[in-house]
Length: 126
Length: 359
Image (tube, rainbow over all chains, first blue to last red; front, top):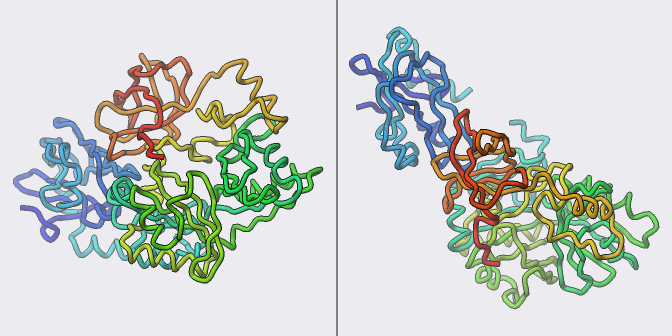
């Protein structure tokens, strides 16, 4: 199971966790705190092809909309239906049950190029 | 964010200490939220919350012609009987809204006008320009006042612990108070759709009110919750829902225009518009599918663009709610679509306010 330590990160605050060629994607604890009370998540459709860095999901808080970018390229193979019913799940468990979607990675090297937790945390201090 | 150049209210340090997430709001350093906008919204709807509204402006209008002058620059009939206050729009010769403000009658020749923070300088310049020929003195006293809005079904209980006789005050009245060694005012007004008061005191005293209310259990609330509450309650946000080019009629506030009173600025233009009819009016919408409408989203009916949103949010009570200028041929209950992030989400036109105000 993914957690903050065993995941990789994009500078745009998504985490990614690779298992059997499929990358699970969510937002970091830092991001959920910054966004605040999440009230709606506009998830991508399964079957959609995305490229790394592409805006493919929107998280709405009371105050603002935040775009979520695919950390790797590939096909969306699953979305987390639980956050449709309970968007605040992303606030409560950003690194766990509040994951957003899964991508069948077409370019595994993109995953390797993501930041580890330490490097991601360093970007937050800047 | 370079916060050096931002203006700070007397409650700035107290807001930061209470966990306020501070933002630049029209040049003011103010809390957008404390722990959670949803929790703050709930506190105001079910109990009590308090807002630092010290950035708002206080302008004195005094003199023999004070009331005559206010009648001249306001669309509404300003009450000249203490301790009554009157909400009104201040418009230019074209009938376009400059600001909305409450004028409180302290004495027949002395009024306190409470104006929007972002409009203080514009309003004072406008007042001075229009004051020619009136025996009136205009004083911008905004920097000398701190202000707390205490709102919610239990707000009066909390206020009564500090201020004697506050529960007996009728809505939209003002009362002078002495609190923590300073003289100030309390008004039974607000911007949330709940009962409550707004307390004005000099900076050195207002901080004690904040501390006392906090100690009593009143939840500090930020601009985020304030915006949801005011939108639910159907209150106009000048600068956002009116941008200097709309009349009170277009802003769906026709009730503040009293065409039959003596001549006032903008009267001719407003008479002409009332005769000609409106093309667009500020209109309420509720989404009927999940999503959050925002300022700038377009409204369509049968594929034809009918309007653009000026305010939208997620309401814990009504989900996706919004107002925007839309063609007046839209009818109550009409099914429309609102374009959000490139997707058209179904919605319907509704009457505002969304929330049945308790005041």
